[in-house]
Length: 372
Ligand code: PLP
Image (tube, rainbow, N blue to C red):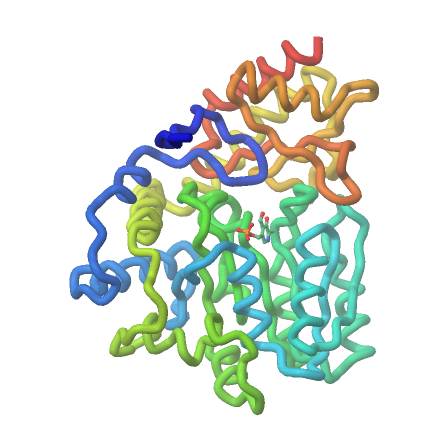
């Protein structure tokens, strides 16, 4: 059998990510591959770092993209910061908090779980109680934008709490970055990881990270080696670090980094605050339309993420069949519920380039047609 080239169908991506990728980003990716140590490429790497510092609102010198998806960004934070026996407070209010706990345990750490209901934001009082009960806590970890539920947790108070109790803060901003404010320096956050495939509307497979001096200090003073060779920041710093000689560590995904560079240039052109504002405005448009159809949100208005709308599936509707029809007839992808929310909600993403009036109209008219 001869296999021909793969030509993907055209879709409108309004699920939990990836989001629609702008033609400029796709075109950037198709530019000629150069060596990952080519002087021209190294110049571009410096630009990617400073554009990421802008996106994260930080002066942290160690700000760069991990050459792997968001889960690897998560793993790079835990693998480098957790030493065997370290106590880590892990806030769980959805799937990605659970994944954090798994990471802590695989690093030999002791996870102290602070649980909140799915659909609710992390309760800072519970976190403070856990810090009081465990004064030797080394890290407080939480998800700012829980993609599984569409809930926002305000990092300011949790990061400040961590600092006050002598712990580091570790923030999952995979879905948050560029969709809602991520203010690393204002919060005093110590380790933050993100994803490229959500509100940056870049291709999937890279994970921007940023580490404070306090976090770097902990990493430099480790008494045990980081268990993962690939994610060991002490080694990666030779390629991505400040003033590094840019020595070979691994072969960087050169073309994917062109794509990230382009999406960050586009973010800079739009302006970070305008991007936050656009996400908020599009969310209000979608909300008005959904509510006019009698659909309800699963999350209290106070904690709703504009970029991830968790909508209750009306009684009697066949979830999988509706999503299949939306995809096949209208090329529209919306997300299914995960974990405790499986079969109960749809996750409608308004991330990056997907957050447009045109997409909102497509989504509303598709739902209206398929629900009637
Ligand atoms: N954290 C959050 C909040 C996410 O939404 C995701 C992916 O959806 C991840 C981590 C993992 O990222 P990836 O799927 O790119 O590995």
